Length: 186
Image 1 (tube, rainbow, N blue to C red):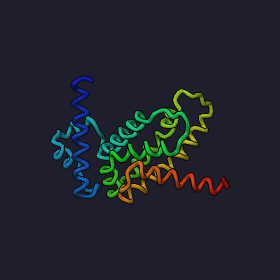
Image 2: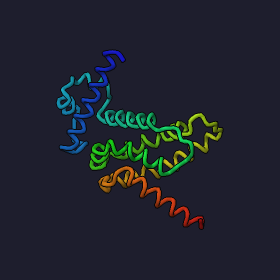
Image 3: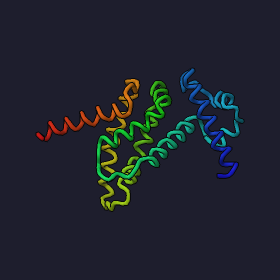
Image 4: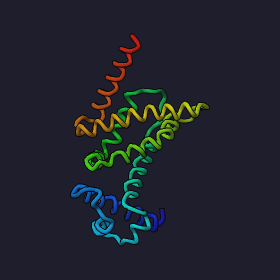
């Protein structure tokens, strides 16, 4: 990575941190770009080289989080709901302070949108090199499972993320498997 790219990434991090700090102090709607650049100690033109508006700061942050999740999600040997849940919740738990702040500010839907947007890519990467010609099936399965996981993440955030990721994943997977077993009579 060249020096220019490092500088851009450092400026972006400073702007993100400034925005999040301001969000703890006041409503998102009342935060201005001027306040963000002042808090970040960057020039206004630096902000506009990186973003069009303050919403782009959040969008880029969410894209980065989703990219990081995609990169850390290992290939699965088989579909194991408990393993998937534990890895998913462990990843998001690392970002709980920001997730709770977004929920408090009513901006968590932006993150859920980004998660759903990359869901098919996550499913494809998790199945690894396995040949699957049913692209529509992957997309349906990704939408189905992502919707459930997003709502479970949202519920966890709303209840304060008190459980560890392992505890929450265990509770969720046991409840789901118990329910499925009751419905199928097994």
